[in-house]
Image (cartoon, rainbow, N blue to C red; front, top):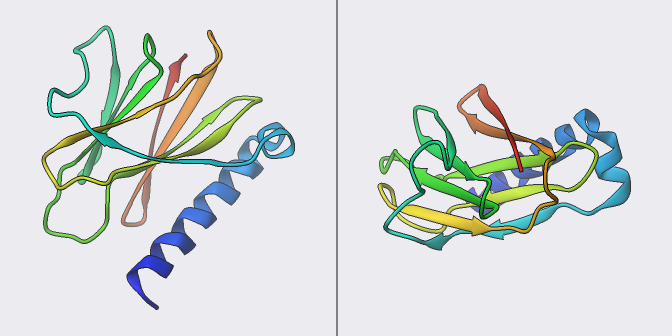
Length: 134
């Protein structure tokens, strides 16, 4: 299986899992796929953004601008940084990095205010999650 097909298969599996976790999301909207735009300055510091770090990726959510920030921490693999997100009872999708390791990228979204948003980052056989408020 090619790398691209493997990434698509894993992404599809994770988004289907999100649909089961948040069934109202699946019934009302289609998954949103976004690629990051390179932003060397990175996210604002706390309390303006909430972050989670895994062994290979750092994800931050900036509620004030509805921005999802990604940083690939492992240049030794071929997999881009990415996170799945889901607004409880609403939209869901994925923000995927297009930049090299060690650089920040951002997906600029427009979320409804005061909603709970869940993030899932997959690494090896582990899922890392965190929750924020839009």
